[in-house]
Image (cartoon, rainbow, N blue to C red; front, top):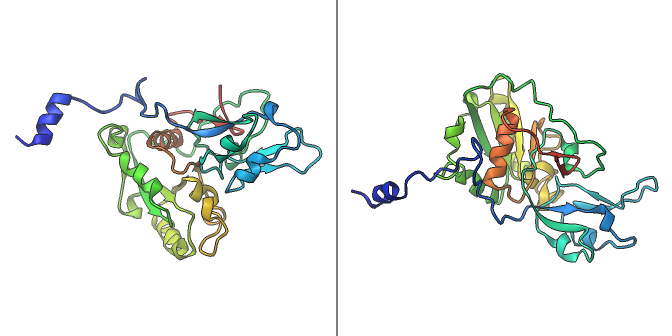
Length: 267
């Protein structure tokens, strides 16, 4: 008997019950997006904005705003430099990782007086049994790819959710893009999108695909998928963890609710 077969028989089922049932999602102890506490922000302090390498945090110059900072999680690479630089913990560490949204503006922090109800997408309401995904690496560092590979391991076992990766765009429903979209990948990316049958959708995975990330505006790329393809799901992170990718895919399928509105987790 092969050793791996014996190990499997001894250890039993290893797949996590989440997200079909309550249970471990594999993110215990995981450090997520920094959480913004505007009430702790001191006047005149710009330490977190100066430390941010991607301009995810900027100091507002408009006099009419009550908040000193603009926090854009679509630019955040989760480096935690802002939490280390902030003397008052206005930017504090957190375990917030499920940042998939349907609208780009929901990744920008704003005050919310009332919780925003989740509005399921009518466009994807027809999916019931399976979703086929075509992945395109548009200049990634392979950080996102390592998380995508983990989706098919025994713990996450993406296939049990009816979600499959396909090598051909002609059989794909969703185009999953990683990387900052280098100029060299513009034409191949557009050709892949055009080869997909209608209706077709696009998911930006990782901060690079959402906004360009660290490489934004460099000699080789622009601003991620902005102005390149219409995006239906935004998932920042550097890289987003496997559970965050699963949550975003199921959110796209209306099988899980969106958790982030106005840059804040819905309560």
